[in-house]
Each structure stands twice: as structure tokens, then as C-alpha cells.
View 1 (spheres, rainbow, N blue to C red):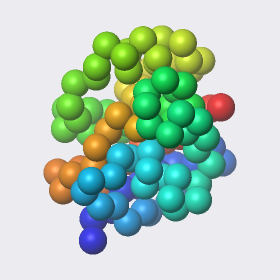
View 2: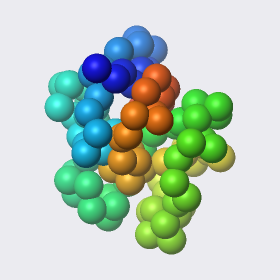
View 3: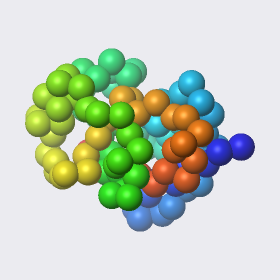
View 4: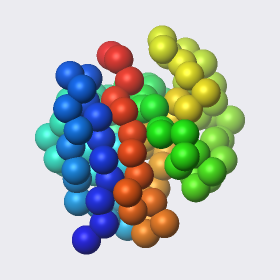
Length: 103
């Protein structure tokens, strides 16, 4: 089983089982971590904002214009900000590390 590593807002690291076919948001949400994901993955709310560890950015597909627009509306925007609903998990992302952005 593949894993992703998620740093929550309290600084705790969670090692979550990850399966292809799910988004990073779905994996985090299904594990019971505090991620709102209000729109359910439609890239229309930015409540699943995460910071991707820099070394993993080159492994991700490019951001869509919609994702960029939604992230521009968030507080705490960084160069490594992504919407976790827009990151589909695949085996190449085994070991991915993200941090939940502030609410």
C-alpha cells in the first residue's frame, strides 16, 4: 500500500494509506483529518488548500486556470500552494508530503 504524509494544523504528522483513483483531498478527508473540502472536489471553494513539500512539486500535473484562480482568493498563499482536490493520487506520488494550510 502506498502512503502520503500529512502535517495537520497542530504540527502532527499522519501517515495515510493512499490509493490510485482518489484525490489527495479524498484521502485526507477519509482518514478523518480536519479538512473542510466544502465543495467536495469541484475546485470551487479552496477549503482543501495544502502546501506541497517543495521536492514533490515537479511530480504534480500543472495547475489549471480554475485552481490558480481559487488559490488567489485564499489567505496564506505560497509558491507551493495547491488544492488537494486537484491532485489525483498515483503510484508516482507514494511518499508525498503535504501540510494543511490554515483555515
